[in-house]
Amino acid sequence: MNLLKSPSAFIKLPKNFISLSSRHARCNSTVTSPPPADGHLPSVANSEILRTKRETGLRTPGIIWADEDATAPSRIIVGGRETRKMNTYQAIRDAMSIALAKDEHAVVFGEDVAFGGVFRCTMGLAEEFGKERVFNTPLTEQGIAGFGIGLALMGHTAIAEIQFADYIYPAFDQIVNEAAKIRYRSGGSYNAGGLTIRTPTMSVGHGGLYHSQSPEGFFMAASGLKIVIPRSPIQAKGLLLGSIRDPNPVIFMEPKILYRSAVEQVPVDDFELPLGEAEVLVPGSDLTLLTWGTPVYHCETALHLLAAPPPELESIIPASLRSAKIELIDLRTILPWDIETIAESVSRTGRLVIVHEAGMTAGAGAEISAEIQKRCFLKLNAPVRRVTGWDIPVALQFEKFHIPDAIRVLDAVMETLTY
Image (cartoon, rainbow, N blue to C red; front, side):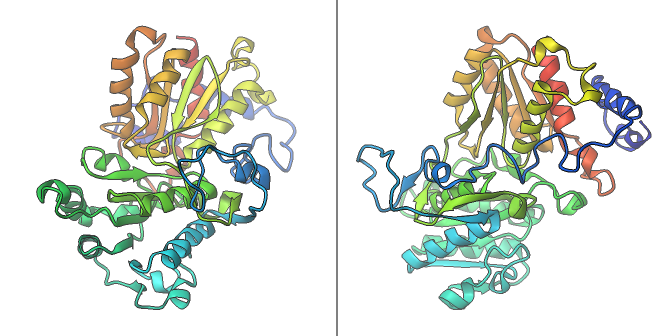
């Protein structure tokens, strides 16, 4: 309770904020034996939604192979194709390597990218493709965005890196007023469709107010942009290649905590995943749980807690709720977001819980809530619920209390199921 005094001095916390969390803490005080070494719950490293086998990696839903005719019927046979074990930053590096190799007009630039970047996503690219195509820029985000827009206008494929999403704000004017509007302003004579802006986003556990923000919601009103947030290596490679080749400027936000923790068997061939389409990770019929990026794994943990609570939570989670079928959806593309898939799911389940790390006020969840309420009003059995970061700067010491963790998600799911 004392740990929450600082946040509550700035915001009005929901009444149920510590209902489950505090009871969990009290129950923990009575536990006499430690949990097993590998823990009770799945982590990112052993998540069941990661594709850790060749067969599942090659059969990723929606995958589009670059060497196949897109108009031909989809094939189940994946013989002759191979995968390689990659984490997220390696998959991103692989995507950029393919883009540079196949497109002689593609260039990669940003602060420190020639050295590999702070997260090593561009490691070795300058040596492989030359410093005229992979190069460092001055420390100016506005300049990086403006330079990328100019390159795109001249027909180049510009892959720009903003070192942290927290520092994208100086480039906001260039992105929103120039990149997003140039096609409309010029009557279609020019466009910045060749521009992709990569940037690490979301919390890392110790990033604090300048290295753990989630600014995707700030760009949702900028018509002309696309915003993509992958949650896994396969998504990172396929969605990044799709973003680089999309005819619109794309902001590609990479959850930094997943750079090394998420590992999959990633197809080595050139492939894309479609932008603007959500992915249903776990089908269900009683409640729709919608999220993107790192919180996907917190939501997965919450579902495990609900279905098979550890001993210290058994008295808190009613047995009647443990068999609930929760539909877990990864939104993937924040703009344009997949309205049809979400509306269809909520029409079936009658309930929606939205989870994101950004603050609640005017966050992406607010827009989604408004649209789903309009489309599914007569099908809803409970109000749309949002589980988000608090409307305060991300505090360094209390960052773990800021993010929507599994306990907060579980609390929201239980209350929505019993509304």
